[in-house]
Amino acid sequence: MRKMWKALSLLLVVALAAVVFAGCNNSGGKVSVGIVLPTKDEPRWVQDEKRFKDALKGTKYSTEILFSQGSSAKEKENVQTLINKGIKVLIICPQDGAAAASAVEAAKKEGITVISYDRLITNTDAVDYYVTFDSVAVGAAQAQYLVDHAKGSGEPLYLYAGAASDNNAFLFFQGAWKVLQPKIADGTFKIANSSEAVALQDKADLSRDELSKIIGQVTTNWDPNEAKNKAQTHLTAAGADMKGDVAILAPNDGTARSIADVFGSDSAVTSFVVTGQDAEKASIQYIIDGKQSMTVFKDVRTLVKDAMGMAINILDDKKPETTGSYNNGKVDVKAKQTDVIVVDKDNVKKELIDSGYYKADDFTGIQ
Ligand code: GAL
Image (cartoon, rainbow, N blue to C red; front, side):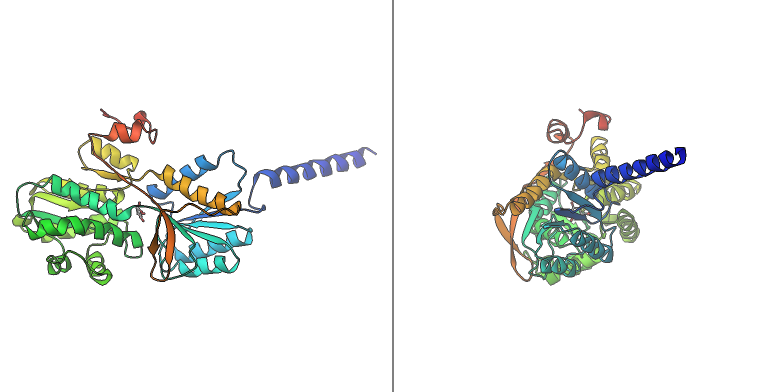
């Protein structure tokens, strides 16, 4: 008798555990919105993960966020995992814009609506919507900051770019070139580290191929180490006429800090103005400490709100709101675009603390 009670109560405990486990862990459950981000190795995308989780807290929508760890193969696997979980909407920021086409085509075949997030997926008609920031304005703002802080004429200009696999890298550089080219032509700046850019310095509007040539030569692949190595190579090759007071176009914060450290350790460089992007916490501290000049703040809370807003409209069979479109080489993708904000030491508090994006005690020396 006693043995029978013991077996029965054990059975009861196991059954109970199974029910509880199924409730909280979505791994077995159906997911309505799948979210795929490029990598956890960059603060930018960890930021987006946090903002998605904040936005989804307490909502009825079942979502799952997966990272592709810098691999298009892993990205495709992630998309398949989410397809198998029955998603209706896929929000995806591609590791490589062109390589992601096959992953979203697989989703499209299952009748899933695809939203390209921050970066555009190119050369496929399997993308329904695109939410992003004004990436051309990012580059233009970085360049304008260099122009506004230029010292005299003939100032050496060092150019760096993002990864050529990222369509945004072309939009950033296109926006920067539009502002810089006239200032190269009028002698304010002289290009210090790119023969491809020198060859095109009299041309205001560059084709995709011409942009490719320059980006191919000065790309950082969004990798701070690659940026550091390139900066060291460029400074080693540079003569005294390419040092002194210099201007540096760095594409984002991660690469800006490593480039700034290299230029900051070269005694022949008397001063430098260096740009950035993403308002990463580490770079905000660099800006407060005067080691990085500016960053372009992209309020990820807005991008997340736009992406989830679209997803919820789609789940509710409503037409998502869009404000324009981007041609991805195959189709015009309906898009929603958000403006960007220039941040330097004069408005860190207003734009990043008073707005609630960061807390004051995340930093030291904030005015
Ligand atoms: C870009 C993104 C930037 C930057 C970069 C590196 O596509 O728009 O914010 O972080 O990727 O991941």
